[in-house]
Length: 113
Length: 112
Image (tube, rainbow over all chains, first blue to last red; front, top):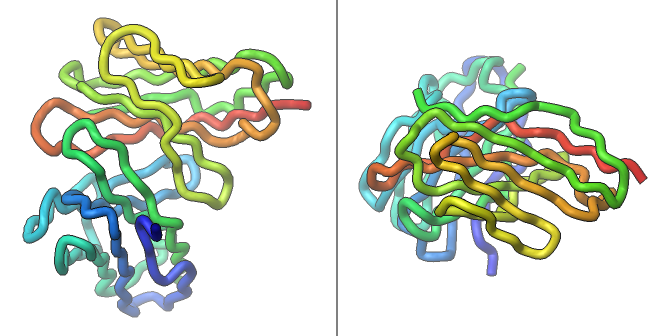
C-alpha cells in the first residue's frame, strides 16, 4: 500500500521559474493538504481540499496555486519561485473529517536560488 | 488566528526516565488533539490521538488532555535513545472539516 506519494523528492529552481509538486493518495480519503516546513517554524498549511472539486487557502497561500485533479490527486504549483519558498513541502491526506489523523507523504525538498 | 504553543526545547532526558512534553492551544472549541513524532529528514507520523478529557495510554506513551486549561501533554515512559525526535502537537477545531493546526514542535533528546 503506497499511501501518500509525492514527486519530486528534491528540486532546485532558479528565481522566477515555475514548477508543480504532485501528490497522490490511494486510501480513498476525501481531504488533502499541502504544508510547508521551515526550521523553527513547524508545519504551516498552504492550501487544502476538503473534497474533490473544492480548495481553500491555509495560513500561507501567497505565491502558490493548487488543483484537486480528482479524488486521488492534489497538486501544488509555484508560478514564479522565490528564495522565500525554499522549504520542505509535505502533502497529506485525512482518513476522516474533523477527527481523523493525517497521513503524510515523504516530503519534497525545494531549493530556490 | 488559532495557535498551538510548544516549548521548542531541546528537552534532554536520560535513558529510562520519563519525558514530559507539553502543548497549549488558543481555540477553546477545539475537539481533537494529536501527537506526531518526526525524525530528522522524515515525515511526521502519528503516535497518539485524544478527544476527551483525561488520560489515554498506549504502550510507553500517555496523552493527557485538560480542555478547561486548554492543555495537552505527552508522557513517554522508559525513554529510549530511539525516542529522540521532534514531537509535534496538532489540534483540530470544532467547525466542520477544519484542518489540523500544528505547534512548532519540541525536540527531545534521550541520552544513553
